[in-house]
Image (cartoon, rainbow, N blue to C red; front, side):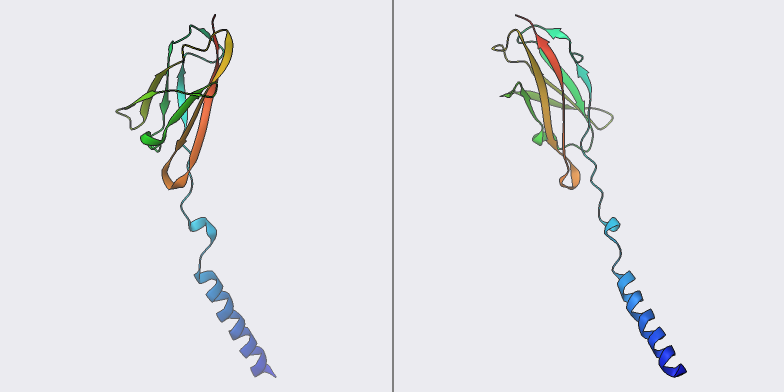
Length: 126
Protein backbone atom coordinates (compact mmCIF):
# COMPACT_ATOMS: atom_id res chain seq x y z
CA UNK A 1 0.00 0.00 0.00
CA UNK A 2 2.89 2.34 0.78
CA UNK A 3 4.24 1.84 -2.74
CA UNK A 4 0.96 3.09 -4.22
CA UNK A 5 0.99 6.15 -1.94
CA UNK A 6 4.52 6.98 -3.05
CA UNK A 7 3.48 6.48 -6.67
CA UNK A 8 0.56 8.92 -6.31
CA UNK A 9 2.76 11.52 -4.64
CA UNK A 10 5.27 11.17 -7.47
CA UNK A 11 2.54 11.57 -10.14
CA UNK A 12 1.14 14.66 -8.39
CA UNK A 13 4.60 16.21 -8.20
CA UNK A 14 5.12 15.68 -11.94
CA UNK A 15 1.73 17.18 -12.79
CA UNK A 16 2.24 20.27 -10.65
CA UNK A 17 5.75 20.77 -12.06
CA UNK A 18 4.40 20.75 -15.61
CA UNK A 19 1.79 23.34 -14.66
CA UNK A 20 4.40 25.74 -13.25
CA UNK A 21 6.57 25.34 -16.34
CA UNK A 22 4.20 27.43 -18.43
CA UNK A 23 4.55 30.54 -16.27
CA UNK A 24 1.90 33.02 -15.31
CA UNK A 25 0.06 35.69 -17.26
CA UNK A 26 2.13 38.38 -15.53
CA UNK A 27 5.09 37.41 -17.70
CA UNK A 28 3.51 39.21 -20.67
CA UNK A 29 4.55 42.78 -21.50
CA UNK A 30 2.85 45.45 -19.43
CA UNK A 31 0.77 48.14 -21.06
CA UNK A 32 1.93 51.69 -20.29
CA UNK A 33 -0.53 54.19 -21.71
CA UNK A 34 0.69 57.42 -23.30
CA UNK A 35 0.47 60.40 -20.92
CA UNK A 36 -0.27 64.02 -21.72
CA UNK A 37 0.92 66.94 -19.57
CA UNK A 38 1.81 70.66 -19.60
CA UNK A 39 -1.48 71.86 -21.12
CA UNK A 40 -1.40 75.44 -22.43
CA UNK A 41 -3.63 77.39 -22.00
CA UNK A 42 -4.57 76.14 -18.56
CA UNK A 43 -7.88 74.39 -17.94
CA UNK A 44 -11.04 76.56 -17.76
CA UNK A 45 -9.20 79.66 -19.00
CA UNK A 46 -10.97 81.95 -21.47
CA UNK A 47 -9.19 82.13 -24.84
CA UNK A 48 -9.80 83.93 -28.11
CA UNK A 49 -11.12 82.05 -31.14
CA UNK A 50 -8.31 80.69 -33.35
CA UNK A 51 -5.80 80.83 -30.47
CA UNK A 52 -3.05 78.26 -30.12
CA UNK A 53 -2.77 75.40 -27.66
CA UNK A 54 0.01 72.99 -26.76
CA UNK A 55 0.79 69.99 -24.57
CA UNK A 56 3.50 67.40 -24.02
CA UNK A 57 3.09 63.71 -24.93
CA UNK A 58 5.16 61.04 -23.17
CA UNK A 59 8.05 59.24 -24.86
CA UNK A 60 6.09 55.99 -25.30
CA UNK A 61 3.61 57.75 -27.63
CA UNK A 62 3.69 57.09 -31.36
CA UNK A 63 3.78 60.66 -32.76
CA UNK A 64 2.07 59.75 -36.06
CA UNK A 65 -0.99 58.45 -34.18
CA UNK A 66 -1.72 61.54 -32.06
CA UNK A 67 -5.17 62.91 -32.88
CA UNK A 68 -6.67 66.10 -31.42
CA UNK A 69 -10.23 67.37 -31.68
CA UNK A 70 -11.68 70.58 -30.28
CA UNK A 71 -15.37 70.25 -29.44
CA UNK A 72 -15.49 67.30 -31.83
CA UNK A 73 -13.85 69.17 -34.73
CA UNK A 74 -10.58 67.67 -36.03
CA UNK A 75 -7.60 69.98 -35.68
CA UNK A 76 -4.26 70.06 -37.48
CA UNK A 77 -1.33 69.64 -35.12
CA UNK A 78 2.44 69.97 -35.22
CA UNK A 79 4.48 67.35 -33.34
CA UNK A 80 8.07 68.19 -32.35
CA UNK A 81 10.44 65.75 -30.57
CA UNK A 82 11.85 66.97 -27.25
CA UNK A 83 15.33 66.35 -25.83
CA UNK A 84 13.93 64.34 -22.90
CA UNK A 85 12.29 61.85 -25.26
CA UNK A 86 8.72 63.15 -25.26
CA UNK A 87 6.91 65.17 -27.89
CA UNK A 88 5.71 68.79 -27.90
CA UNK A 89 2.34 69.02 -29.67
CA UNK A 90 0.77 72.31 -30.77
CA UNK A 91 -2.28 73.33 -32.74
CA UNK A 92 -4.92 76.02 -33.24
CA UNK A 93 -8.49 76.18 -31.97
CA UNK A 94 -10.92 76.37 -34.92
CA UNK A 95 -12.00 79.96 -35.64
CA UNK A 96 -15.62 78.85 -36.03
CA UNK A 97 -15.90 78.15 -32.28
CA UNK A 98 -17.02 81.27 -30.40
CA UNK A 99 -18.72 81.82 -27.06
CA UNK A 100 -18.67 78.15 -25.99
CA UNK A 101 -16.81 75.81 -23.71
CA UNK A 102 -14.76 73.33 -25.72
CA UNK A 103 -12.85 70.24 -24.74
CA UNK A 104 -9.49 69.77 -26.39
CA UNK A 105 -9.53 65.97 -26.62
CA UNK A 106 -6.42 63.89 -27.29
CA UNK A 107 -6.11 60.25 -28.34
CA UNK A 108 -2.93 58.39 -29.22
CA UNK A 109 -1.45 54.94 -29.56
CA UNK A 110 1.54 53.88 -27.54
CA UNK A 111 3.90 50.95 -27.31
CA UNK A 112 2.52 47.41 -26.85
CA UNK A 113 -0.85 48.37 -28.42
CA UNK A 114 -1.72 50.70 -25.54
CA UNK A 115 -4.17 53.48 -26.26
CA UNK A 116 -4.16 56.68 -24.22
CA UNK A 117 -6.47 59.63 -24.07
CA UNK A 118 -6.67 62.94 -22.27
CA UNK A 119 -7.55 66.56 -22.69
CA UNK A 120 -8.80 69.68 -20.99
CA UNK A 121 -11.60 72.24 -21.13
CA UNK A 122 -11.27 75.87 -22.24
CA UNK A 123 -13.79 78.69 -22.64
CA UNK A 124 -13.72 80.35 -26.05
CA UNK A 125 -14.63 84.05 -26.04
CA UNK A 126 -17.16 85.66 -28.40
